[in-house]
Picture 1 (cartoon, rainbow, N blue to C red):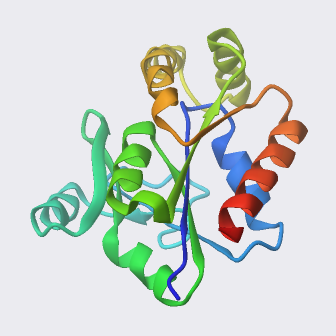
Picture 2: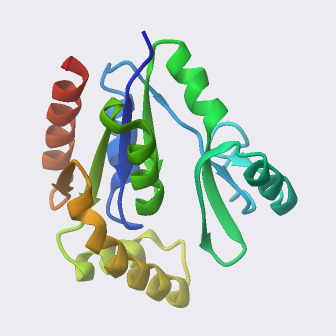
Length: 188
């Protein structure tokens, strides 16, 4: 039997990656769907582990060959996408696929798979708290943070289109809520 799909989407800094990493350690039969990107790897990232790092030309060739389930140019010159082959590789093993994707990508995957997928939106308690988290990361310039906050304000408007929304005010509470939601979905 093919595995199900669990999609986590959120504005940058809302905590989706932290929640997904937590869920992967909880004994659910989940495997992480590794996204492809056209951006350069950060110094700690590895090809095939964090992302499939592709050149801009390689990425576009895969788009033209309809190899992506979803993809988006998230920032000018930087695209991210989910390879159909990656998802099917995991599902064919009978494992459930968990995604950490942007908001538009999450909705596209949900639309493609319908009831086989659960779309979860992780929402920060406020835009101001989101900004504080991004500043606290110390990974982006002030200009990049302003860009991410503006994008987040837009992405928050998509929350009602998801199956469920988790407000990540306290991380421990968000973990518990995510575990409960996943458990119920996998039992169906």
